[in-house]
Image (cartoon, rainbow, N blue to C red):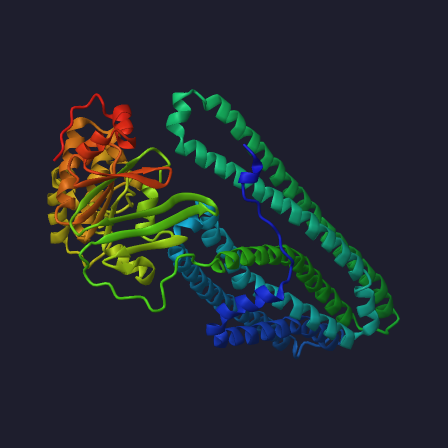
Length: 596
């Protein structure tokens, strides 16, 4: 399988002002808390620099003078400073986590709401896994940066600035000796950051490949076992696992090398300070307390640099995640409600396709100049070979897509001028593979719409004959259904889909009858009765693949290569001996059918 199908983590620039400003918009509602957090960060950085100064005073002013009159006081002050730093650090962490969590919740809700408004064409172009990654991994990366990375980066920078300032004030010559190796360390840290960036990218790429292949194998386990592909699949899984193992070991190797490198610079700098500072202490041009303070500052100086190098990679990840998230948010909705949309009360169900042309891909017309009229309460079947455009009619009537030419009208109003929500509330759709949610039977029928009462749910189930199998389930309407209805048969899922339509009571019913081809005759007969019950008194369009459905309709429309080639009753179309007759000969010539 080509690795191009697996999405790899791309790194953007470490800083992009446009993206940062846009992210700042999500922090704006929490500016007061943000300013308080910044004040705590500054206070913590300042207090962090006070500890070594207290030690200096204790050594020079007490121990060196062989006094102890203020030694206890200085010890308590030192412990108090440490306690204050702890409290301030705790406060800033809690506040910044609160800001990050709230801001990312706002972003996640906005992203999810945007996805729900997108047209079906958008989901045709974007794999589900990619969109889930946007809502989970990418938002989590931003959340981590905002909750921890920003505070730690600011704290580290302020700590470095304060320490350098204090060192210069204490003794500028010793401060110069302390930072003499800093340019070399920054260069080495930069090299490691680039190497680790590539290592992390390789690690995530192999993890994506492994997860994608694992998902594919588990989903298709029945086929894998049927064709005895377990050994071959294990070999391919082993290849991906080894790739991930090598990537992980490479990351660990460079991390293991990076830590001692920083420690080495730390040790060399310690040696320089002890050699140079110790000599000056012996010459009595530097106090012992100042030397000890320098050693303490040195310990606090190098770790922020190391931490900032790690934040560099995290910041790159955050920029890339932000760019991808905003890329989704900037996608136009495709199908939008007209600003002057017409209110849609309860409709009669008159449907008209007027000179409709439609193409999923520009220039590749699926429907060509399609025109027909369906009166309220009329039942119409649409038949044709695979690819003739039958399902496209349903997609367009529900306005999952907009037509390129012509108009579709409901009760004389173009669907473009109707609000999508109101239009779809009047149209019931029974798919060939109904989607079942992980929830109770009751909620699956009323689609978690509390305006539909439990009594209405039960009435709808009785109308389509679903109450029989529901009554046999242990918890009845409260029975929990498995993912995608794994604990239901195909026929039972179809009955739930029909019950949904009955519960929502639309004026128009669209039915895909293809699923009845894979069930037993008894269940099929039950479904046919249920379909007739749902279509009763409503305008109905049936995408017909089986003649058992066609016998109950008033009229048949025949599509061929995107055009209407014939229209009439079953007997009329057979008498013409045209396209419908040929379909009948190919598919139904051995069936004894009647026309209702």
